[in-house]
Image (cartoon, rainbow, N blue to C red; front, side, top):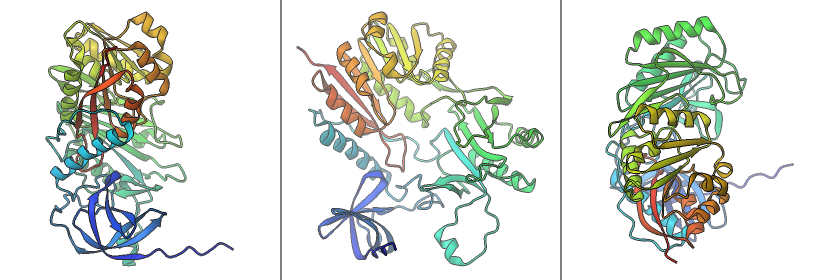
Length: 471
């Protein structure tokens, strides 16, 4: 017989004092810390403890007694239910201060290296409708909020088009209006949802793994070009054609309408053939007169305007004069490589995804750039001592790894190659700090520049300039 779980307490009149990691807030009660989502410094509330450890607890606000004076009204009707923008109630200037501190804490506590003064974070010009890419899921298991459940009403219509609920992979929150992308994305998603319901199209069942309408990706470039990629969970040519014909007719702004049939048990389509139904098989972004082709499988920074600010920082930190051999590690579709190529003798880009490397080469060709070379493969396998002997010792390395940071083998190759400068672009200051500690014997940190790419979230990009220590 299982033991009855001990009832966790309700804490009354808890004062929230700070912003914590992962978009949560923080309060101190007696001798332990409580982490609370959707709180703001200065709030006084009753908090129900959901999980308790020896030195900390996690809880949620059940009754707000005194809202903080700094609170702002969230713009989105789905705030607190959709987990995407956890800081909508926090003023943007405070969000930036928190992200600045997040970078400082990671570098000081994890890297423990000598640091210059961290430059003020570069805030986003647009704090709403800043994303160029959104992905939505269609589901026949719409998530019911706690208020809906408590209402006692019957909800027979469970079809939804929106975002996955954290911790419930088969539940999707139906989204009316998302504020992160141009409103065109909402119009298209709602149209397809309504069309599907009116014509009896099946919405995907994430547990049973069947249903026609599965996912929708919308990309809206800074050039105004629009890509819509519809993913179908079943191969029904007549239904697919009928839907796509209506989309073409109703949304002439779409310059690239594509689709793929995915009957696998996961949503990834990197290994599937994507078909172009209308228009081109790519859209284009623009930066300083350079055109970057973005295909359905391409990676491109999701905040186009801030991507330009980020890349300008990387180029400035690289200190290029036109004579340097540059290695761009984790190059993706070669955006940074092509962006800096005009100021370098040669740029060599390396990336794991072969399709991305194909895009990188196309982007060089489209822009008349002839001093780049790109190689596909696992970074730790491609970048080795033989590769450097064959292609030359780099003067500058630009690295932009995934959230996990760099593999130890990659760091060791960099240490043996000893480029004069390293520009480390990171979307995760914690793993960046770990890697900086490994590089510290050979390199000193000369500059640190945080960049905010994702307003209303706790995520932050950070660029670090490292210079080879003198013997």
